[in-house]
Image (cartoon, rainbow, N blue to C red; front, side, top):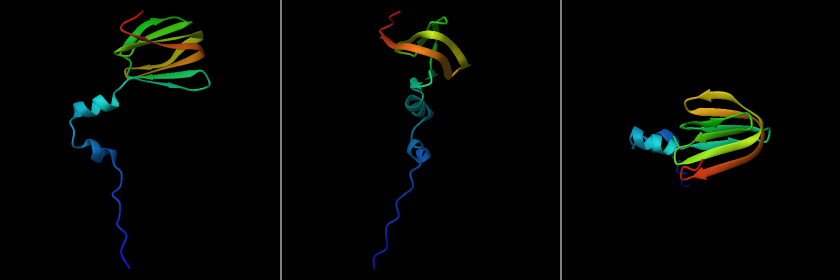
Amino acid sequence: MTAKKRRARFSPRAIFSGGTQAQFSRVCAKPAVHIDCAGGLCFENARGIVAYTDTMIQLDMGGVNVRVEGDSLCMTFYRRDRIAVQGRVASLEFLYGGAT
């Protein structure tokens, strides 16, 4: 009877251990938008707030600006790496090339 070969366990730390911190941040620090069906949005790694009213929020995400339009929009959470928005979202636009 032959013995089964054991597979190596998956480890993100082992995958990224060969690279530098700059390479790791380039992979993991990309801007991202998460949407839930209850009217919540979460923006990760936004560079700044361009405009903010109760009907429109525009964020600088690096190479693209993101504009959210809707009713009763409010920022429920704001931190350097994450912004949460709650409200009735009507549209989500991605503005490329520095459009305002």
